[in-house]
Image (cartoon, rainbow, N blue to C red):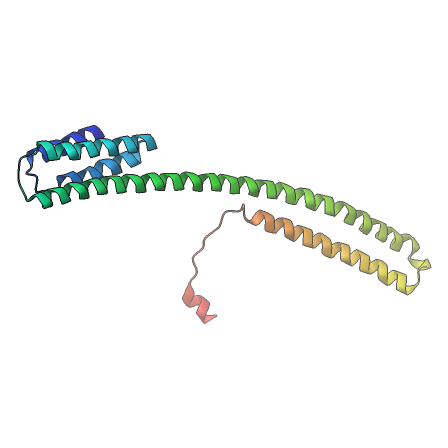
Length: 193
């Protein structure tokens, strides 16, 4: 398809007087190659189009003023190469973006695993502290002074708070992996409330 289009543009260029900028049509070829082929093919077709623009100049019927003919050919060459280089640059940027996305996804998976390990490692000592302070309260509450009882209750409350913080941290770290759910809102109803 691309070769056929290239040949068709070349034939039209050969049958048209030199005063027309038919060579600019090769941009279509470069754009098609950009979407259908590799970087190497993109540059090869840009070079082929360059050769065809020059051959069109040599073998097309006479016509137009020299400055106009040369300007049209130079604009055609510029357009072909500008399109090819912009397309190549865009492809390169896209590959870099895809690589960064893969790295980010990997980092997020590592962070999620790290979060789970950290929360587990933090919860174990808290469970021990909470359990031991609970035993002290259960077995020795009648022998402890009010200040010591207050401290043990404070320790148990702090363990509950720390456990809640760890749970919230885990929920927050997993929130990035959750899918965003969209819902419509009746704004009139919201305003009335």
